[in-house]
Length: 203
Image 1: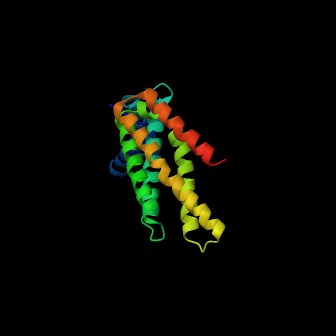
Image 2: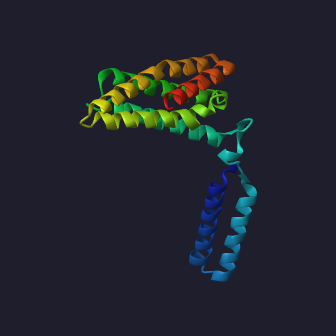
Image 3: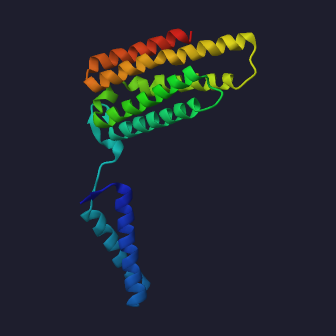
């Protein structure tokens, strides 16, 4: 039997506390011997139960741990939820809201693929680390602009940002398709293309 360190310590502590209570309170043994026996039970429990590796010690692939995978999947879920939330706001125009909804679905599907095959994450880490945060920043900027009384310049900016968001859908679709096909070279390429597009548009 093996448990992660937190659970090993907790279980050993419970056994030790129960032993101390039983000996000291039920059998009325003096507290010092009872404490000694409880300590022995604690140590014995730790010796009997092996320590299971933590998530950040379990390598799924080179330089990719279970912790990395869980963190990436969670971030994708949160990003998708945020996009869906903003797309449902009444002041977001229909076309851009539809694009946000599509992006939300694609990001959730990409997260599913990460869970099914962590190699997909290994070959598209920059998507999670750099491009998704950038996408969320752009979407939040669009939402903020949409909710204000706009000058002519601001209206132009709003249209431009909306076009950006709608334009990202095909790139995320290509990344998702590459995940489905387990085409890791294409996945790296498509992720890089998205990054290049974002860099050009934010200059």
